[in-house]
Length: 205
Figure: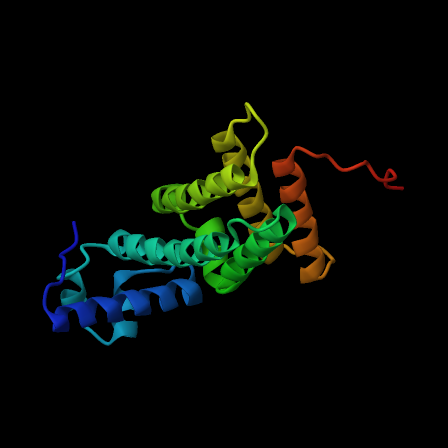
């Protein structure tokens, strides 16, 4: 358990350690991440670091929690602003905000999704997804979901699908423009949430 700073000087020390830890994680990756490297980057002694963080996992927990909180804040704020708008505007605005939030730090995104052990991120990701799902469910309710539809399940499906596809766009982008990706994802979300399906196009050659 890490020490909770109470004095301003201690809080400043913690902020410096966390900021340096985030930079080290992005620069060196998970395998080379260590308390010694973080202490060196922060300009403090390992002993001073250990006063607040017992090991590197404690630092990683704060870094990941804050990073996913940043993503969550941006997406939920955008979704809240879109509530009550027509489905097409709601879907496009939310997808655009999700991509912008994920694109903001692609280096750290790759580390979090491809290098960190699942146990380091699972709780923070669940908290983020839960916040977004709650707003997505509210949006479905305001849009007048079809009678009998399980809005919680619909929100779960669309949030997880949009998150996975957005992350894929940043880490392994297709040969397409960002605008094309936004339009495709927004169309996918809108059609799913409205209960419509698109007519199949010609089979690929």
